[in-house]
Length: 63
Ligand SMILES: [Zn+2]
Image (cartoon, rainbow, N blue to C red):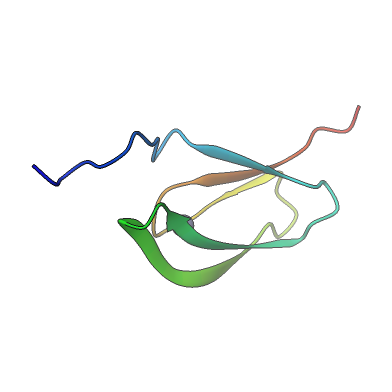
């Protein structure tokens, strides 16, 4: 069995980034779920989802 080597969350995984960021880069999660580095632009939204691995990047809420 080598299908799963570690626990990870895919579509439900959320990565929080600084609220001043306008673009994030993603290379996937873990060595088995990696993908080519892509840049995701918030484009005014508070969150953006990676179309490769499904991770969601969300800006920290201003407090
Ligand atoms: Zn990704």
